Structure formats: C-alpha cells, structure tokens
Image 1 (cartoon, rainbow, N blue to C red):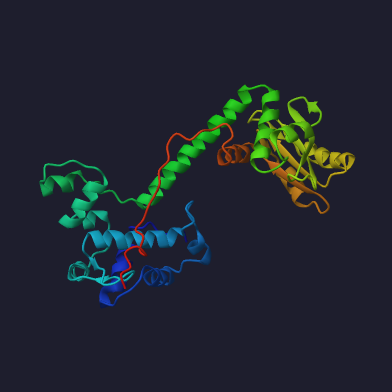
Image 2: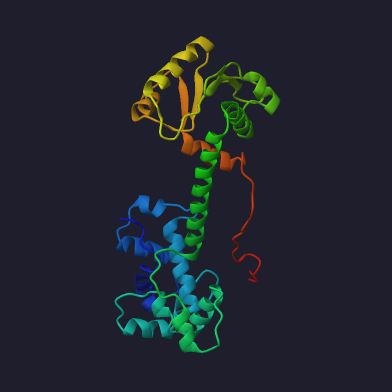
Length: 311
C-alpha cells in the first residue's frame, strides 16, 4: 500500500502512546509500519531532501501533537502522552485530523501564526478561519510538491524555447551541457572535438574526461515533441560507432524514443549507449544551470540539537 497521509497516522500514533511510556519517532514509526503492513518499498520511498516520506510524516505528527499539548517532551528526542492526549483517546475518536486539533487554543495559535492569518483575537473566529480540510501531505511535502510543479513548468518552457531556436543553437547547447557535466575538458576543447554537423543535429566525438582517456560518440536529434525517434535511427547510431572506433555513445533528442529503441540499447553487450530524451535533457539542463537562472532560494532549517545539548 502507499504511504498514508500524515493525518491518517495521527490516531494510531496517539494510541501507541496511551501507555504513558517515553518513545521516539523511530520507535512509534516502526510500530505503525507493522500495524499497517507497509512494505520495504513503502518505507524506502524518499523525498527530494533525502528523507524517507513515511518517517517524515511521523515526525510531523509528533510536532503537531506537541503544539496541541497532546505530547510532552521529557528529554531530548523522547516524548510521552499528556493527560490531554489521554482525554482525547477516552472520547473514542474514529480519526484525528487537524480539524480535531483546532479545539486546542495552543494549536490554534501555532497554526494561525504558521499560516500567517490575521485575526481579532476571538477564538471562535480563529477556528472558523483556519483551514479544516484534511490534507494528506505535511507542510514540507507541500513545499516540495510546489517546487516539483515549478520545475515541471520550467522544463516544458525550456523544451519549447529550444525548438524555437535553430539547429546550430541546439548543437552548442549540447556542448555546454556536456561540459557542465564534466565531459570534454573545457568548452573550447569540447567544441573542437565535435566534428561534422548534420541536418537537425550534430555528430562528433567528445572526451569522456578532462584527460581524454576515452572518447564518446555523440549524436543529437532536434525533433518536434510529437515526432518519436524511430528504433532504426538508434540502430544506425549504434552501427556508426564502429566507424569511429568507439564503444560508448550518447544519443540526445528533444523528443522521445520508441520502446523498441530503448530495449535495443538495453540488450547491447559490447557497447554502452545512453539515450537522453527531451524530458531528461531539460532536467539535466536545470540541474547543471544551462539556460536557466536562479530567481529565489528558500533554505529549510531545523533545530540544531547538538547546540542545545547541555548534558
């Protein structure tokens, strides 16, 4: 099953804590994972930050419960249920959501400030203003989702802009990208390494490393997004490696490859060929700052526990 939304983890989290023992996020997470029979794949699902999605959500539950005073924190990394938490469980809730936590003024104050909501100090008005929808994601995941949406839009715009430019521009773009990724030594060296120019793309060789210990045969196909590179061209590209005495090649396109072409490359034994389609191309451009610039940077910070360690 997929990793449950972090609010779906709230009730089982609090139920595990009802015995009053001190626990950690990893301990509670392990029990919940066993209860829900989450697979190893579910538990290994990660976010862009590298954190596992499941334990990130468990940690956010702990944080929200702390703001609602359902948990107390007697020592570093440890928590236990409060009387308020026990009282909530005694009411036999069928589920616990953010809407449930809005009954506690401490949480309302935190959530109001967290969402930058202005109020007149009337608790009833605050509860009305605060969003009570059941969100399946944590605030951190919402930020990550927004980032991925912006990245996807940027990738689409990049591809459109590439196709509006002439083939010669695409040739230089490929050179710049490979140099940024560490191939070809300097941009000047890479440019000299590229040989003949073909219609709608480039053909040539480029150094695999700065010392030129090995070479890579390179071909680029500037196709419209609605035109797929046929498997025949993939096979022809593979055959052309023989004439260049190369065992490695990179075939780049602004469109996509057929399933047959991808499978053909996968089965190769003597040669190593990498296929880069339009989607992968734009992602590499973004990662290596080719054709893009940074407009804003947001740094996510957390408490430095070591700084506050007074033991």
